[in-house]
Image 1 (cartoon, rainbow, N blue to C red):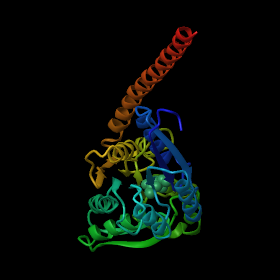
Image 2 (image 1 turned 30 degrees about the vertical axis):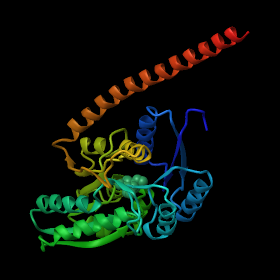
Image 3 (image 1 turned 135 degrees about the vertical axis):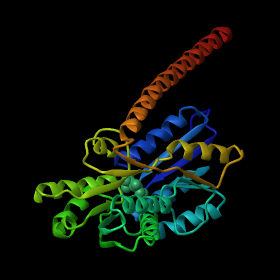
Length: 326
Ligand code: FRU
């Protein structure tokens, strides 16, 4: 602990390497830079639920004041997250959930609503009729379960749209590529492919383009992340037809954590909004996020200056003290 640090927040991330979760972490760190009173511990479970349980157990030994967790798979992570909550250590669940409601707050988008909205968009695009394939995320993850639930619910209003193939893509582009190779014909005969994230959507597209030159399936995804190689850019290039915005909520998670620690008012369910991004608004979204990025880097620079100045100030105070004492 640094002397000024009064609280320790631990963040257990299910898998830390992809762009979406890097963005989440960046947002958290930015928000934390305004709070020198907080120490931050971070662990990346690399998509392994057992490892995530162990990492949370290690956090417990480090005397944490609050846990933020994005559970890899809901069921395996439920007992440990429950037990943290039962030990009166506040828990914020983010993005994915456990299978219980023992937590202080949830921060993230409503994945049932995302599935629902995707269904409406699909029905509209296919004019109420067609065969679709879906590429789900890792089976036991709440985000995948809920997106599928929402999709099926909303397609109930459109009986002429059939989900003909369900493939488990595990949230990974590489896995989606392999699936697409193994199920080329099924996918090529679909009117539309809905992958539960943009990276899987892009993996499928890659293979369809390579092996089926006539391929012109409509492919949609989820996340709509700005930045090179990500959803927004790919929509602008015409590679994806649409994506549902899935905000990372990094800043909101830290803000909620701080409110809990300082015993201020906070909401239990912090549902972040979503919307369909397609060629009609992708450009605007990309411009907006560029602008925000510029403003953010200004803030970051000023923040660094403040930190530097206060260090100089403290050093001078120390020198002054030494002078006075001697
Ligand atoms: C990133 C990710 C996102 C997806 C989310 C679901 O790791 O796969 O692409 O929207 O997780 O939890």
